[in-house]
Image (cartoon, rainbow, N blue to C red; front, side, top):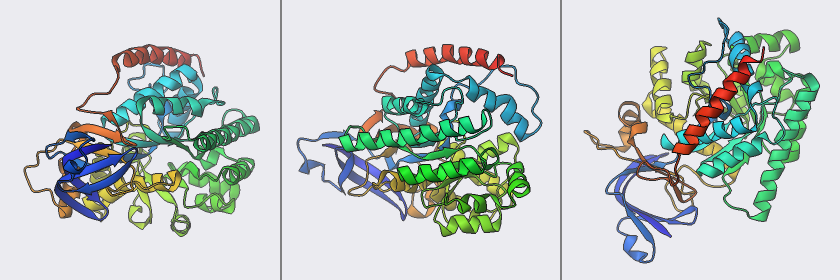
Length: 442
């Protein structure tokens, strides 16, 4: 039993701010929340937060941990004037160069980065075509080592090796989901990592792959995590080759459910959006990545029933992501305000709840104790009515003081519970070897 005493609790849905609360945590869940209740538990470990802001854990709803060692990359990258050439010259060479060692360190570094920036969970989308079998378990080890909650899947695709690659990707997704099921049945702790069924993007998944994905979803009970309409080429390809809108094509195979996560969706039609809304599926908006790849802007954000925020591999700083998403939206003449984007940020917890079969996103009795704790000496009142304004214009990753996941402090007083210097030193060596392998790939 442990207690976070004298917290300023910020809730997002519905919004409220309550000062001087004590949060009692029993194992991985919140047992009680109230004022002055710490004294009721004389045997509990007490941390006096002295008014620090405590909010439900922040979730990055779409990321690529395989890109963790790409920062400042010095591999020889050919000029890439458009999105498809960027994929071919950079990202598809990087993922082909990954091996077990480089993937593990990518996962470690990205997990540490996420936690340091206040994330309690990350939903990952993975690719390593020359290291498929066992790759998701390698990523799971990195999540568990750092204590980060998450989900992951393998990007099913035929872009390198046709049908053989499709089969290998689907088999890795199924095998990983079954591994998670075995771990749950055995009661092994911690239960921190879940599975999606992954696919790269519709333009690299033929009919054969769609059928495989459908069967994988049925056999595992998981939802689909896929890129769609990140670039207009994806839409044109679907119309030209299959005569269907992107989401209509996925829906034809039964791939759109309330556990489906669509990343990007910049060029989805109104009918496609209606299909997602009808099935209660999610779109994840990745503002900074869209800007970086110069793929355009999603002017239809307000039309989605369920929308969350991700980074698409540009770190895991969700404070920055929320700000960029809002500012870009305003710059594009959009009608939404900071409170809307606060809700989008919070919505990642709904994705967790649907997949972990547990309660997330509220500091309430029975919810998972996934918490982001911040130092924030606000010069203006912090109120239910202006939480979005404080997120957009005040709070940042530098505010993060501590992070709790599943009832365990994985980052406290801006320090990890283990030495990370050696991990970073080794990651730098691994990154150089990865970049050298990239230069040997055409």
